Image (cartoon, rainbow, N blue to C red; front, side, top):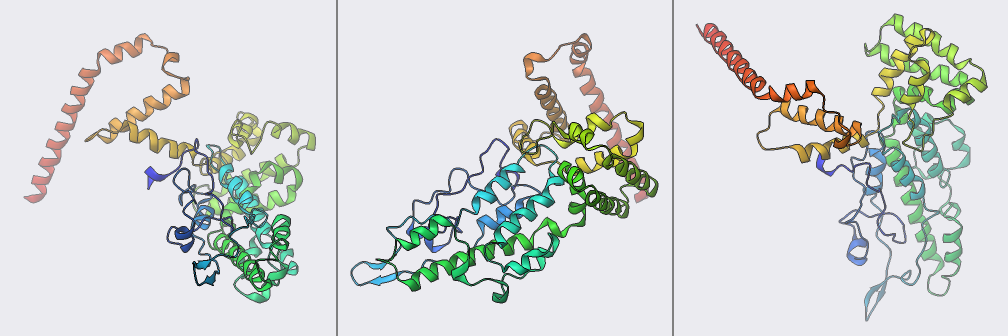
Length: 396
């Protein structure tokens, strides 16, 4: 699985668009008709990221119905839409693709996940779900069953986008009204399938994800009371999991309240360098630069540090898989792999091998490497002997 994971340097792109403008499963009938749909270059993998794999799975696994074709006595089945390159329904993948790319980073991104998933889910549901059901908040969107027709607007009224609507009007000569309605109904089926997949694996179900959104700078600046409520959720989850004790939770809660009550201008200055759509400055850098060394926020920093460690993006991890693969040699011991990886990371941190300062201590250690190696072998030999003696005593 790890060999198939995309690294941060890869572009997450979609296959060439069909008239549904969404990729089909490999065994779909559409692939037998449209051989020009390319997926060999940069396809979306199912395991894109710990925080967005459910969207990748959604995009790869949509089981859309095959196109409805008319019969022709001479040429078999012909598609009445053959001469029309229908655009996607306002390109919902333009929302999904940036979502995947945004979380393909080494920064801590989980604090942004709750709002991002809610926005994506609401965007899709607004196209086909009845408006009176869309007044609920994020987690309640998960309870709307898009499989029930009573929750959906009529197929003819769904939002398919201006370009698609215009081109449907230009197909009057070759396409009947019934075929147009069937096409629109298939568009609605596509949307409901996407929504169902998002609801099935949505992080909106997780109380911890909602709590981590309290570290989102936008939530702190624009909705401080909501941020305090969500931070309490986060502390409860950490405390119940025995990650933090009661005293640390209480102190962190008080310090977070004080932090949220800072002047608006102060908060703006603290979060000014933070750009969630760039990999230059992450939340760890922002919070660390302000909280580290501040006695008034030492408990808050302890909690935030734990949360950000659990919230990293997957680019560094996936890049590590590629590095490990290039370093591996047959029969290499685990400690050797770890040591080589440490060396590689230190060289990368220094900006390249030419920037490494060769100190006298380093040279002395290299000269004595063979001696250290033999000492290590002797130590392992003694450990095996001790283990063998203990085993014999237990046998007696």
